[in-house]
Amino acid sequence: MTLKDILKERIAILDGAMGTMIQKHNLQEEDYRGERFKDFHTSLKGNNDLLVLTQPKIIKDIHREYLAAGADLIETNTFNANIISMQDYDMVDLVDELNREAVRLAKEACTEYSTPNKPRFVLGSLGPTNKTASISPQVNDPSYRDIDFDTLANVYYRQAKTMIEAGVDALLVETIFDTLNAKAAFYGIQDAIESTGINIPLMASGTITDKSGRTLSGQTTEAFLISLEHIDLLSVGLNCALGATDLIPYLEVLADKAPFYVSAYPNAGLPNAFGGYDETAEMMREHIRPFLEKKLVNIIGGCCGTTPEHIQMMAEIAKDYEPRKIAEQCQA
Image 1: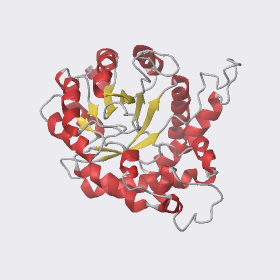
Image 2: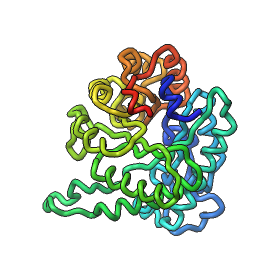
Image 3: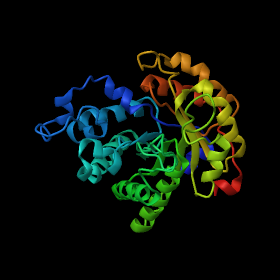
């Protein structure tokens, strides 16, 4: 049974926030360093992607918790495992190893929980980096860019190629705030697919940065969709920045216009004054119910602040609802 087969039949459940679960372990500098990097020359605390090397049991156990909660889809711990993000820690040379190990841990966890009736799938997570190809980082020089399309494409090519070779089931370009970045990502991913000869499903998820309903680079949800429609995507969706209630009008746009399956993994509400998230699984249940009643989604999960309890709640109530339907030619 393939992922596409599942999406035709029911709503698939995506896992919740990796960062939220890591925070619960209250890891210190020495935990991030481990034995291998105990004498490394820069601070490593906060480099969550590095934990696949220094604390692999923690990462694998987090995957297991989400799988036990009912997740069909597990994201690799690779949101920042790219050349640009790893420059902050002077660890660019580890990018390939980080992605390989992250895929291995996720695949092993999925194998433990997969059954013939409920196979589990590994999604290779590719974050947006901290660069933007559309906006100048210098307020006095609007034309300035500190990254270009080809550089971004190469960054994503390297990350995608490693994950494809390591055996991911699909690639998810997520938290897209600049669609030009995303175009570069999928350009690099397509090169990686051609290089490896392995064709896998591709997924995209954008982020609406505030209640203006636009991405950081200024696009509406419909414009975001149109910008990516030329790509052969399995799904398109929204994640992060907003809680479930605030996402509804933008999901309605995707559900009405997208020729792909639609995903949604919102935050557990909006952050509080301390940057935390207060929305419990019980509270979130009522906020995501309209997603299901209106048949807006095919994939549902959680972003910042969500835990296995949130995912278990989603898995339980999603059983009672049918997924959004798309044209048969899009399902072939």
